[in-house]
Image (cartoon, rainbow over all chains, first blue to last red):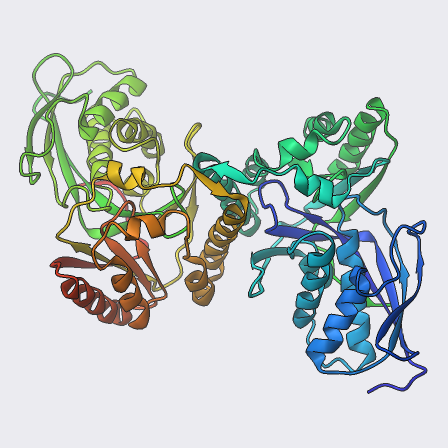
Length: 311
Length: 311
């Protein structure tokens, strides 16, 4: 166990989940934005959240209702450690943007707490506590928390029990994420989902996700482009985003390999074959949002980025 | 073009489709059984079927209703060739066994006809005519015709337009197929399918198919075993096969990596890590069918076999 003066700061990255047809199944970490959680042994009575910055007061400091708090509590529970820990949360991305904001806070908190108490759990074991946290605020899924914790492109084969597969990322593949000044709460985006899908759609969807995985291993970007296609989730969610369809079209017209909604939206991602192509794509996407009357922030990142880490 | 005395004989193998969750999406060729189609320039008025052997009189000789005939007609049409061709079909597997019987006839016929008229089409272009043939008798799917034509393990990303991806097969992987003396017509098996599935099942299914593809590239047989799981199609089809659930259980108990229904059934396949394991598995599966009162025929084959070929 650590001394009481010890402080651990952890950064966990934003994530792009779904990648088109991989609803609740695929997610990848990006670089450049994410959340920072600082943990220190302090106070009494378990986990407390001392302060949250960058959320404009939107998030609760109740540790049982905030994903950082829940992930911290679950981490201690699974480690069998009884400690009183204060968390300081610095939000580095807009809430409800489809970039896994709640997941990044959870991942950073779980890792910070684990390090603080002497790393009783392995990094892969920290994904479970984050899933519990996500379950409270946005549904029981791991496609944001797993890549935020572990980095790279992760396939979530199963949530219960947790079964994660790291997929290779084609060399040079670059992600563009454009986030408009417009909020879609995750719950609302999930409410737009169909409860059932026809069997024919299931066949399309399994085929496309399978082809994405094949394309990642083989580096076949043309196949990747053909496979990032989704008629189950994306149409309903695109309709919630002003200019959404036009932004995706602009990305493809600018030469992106693929483009779709990031997570629950409203952020839209594109996969590009190079940094150069990504820059051109980012401009086109940003322009398309502007035409729809929305300002936006663009991010360009390698598609294969590290996950949560001490800073 | 060829002289009128020329005769072409082609063998096309049986196939195991679906592989659990890959309904209409995954299929692989096996060796040892299949259909033979002999084609020769003869008669007038397009394609005729001169004789069918091994079907106990069950199949029609109407070329527009028999998959070999339809595939032959479509092949000539796509090649832009006007020829009168006689087909002789030798069925090498039981009908309605879930081994792609109609697909093997189509593949053999398409290839034989193409060779006979001087190979105007590439082998991959011959899958399309076979899909048209399947569409008439058992639904518009390519997961039997594609591996029967091309060999190996094939992912059908899309049927319209046809988009096929060859997947690698883990070294040494061996397939066991056990066919009971019991017929499930493909149409009946397809009628047992649900018309819709809940979104949560879609997530499970995409995740498992994605993991199968990953396991094929990485050679991770444990992952392959966990991923050949299907709650959408297999339960309804297993219920149509006396002893079906017990045979799958027997395969897994005997050490098979995975086991499920082959195509529409009633054949049941198992994937095994070696020929030795496959032999043990085949015996256990055959025994389980016997306990259910059914005789059966077993087949052991490498999981990576060639497709249709001239003999």
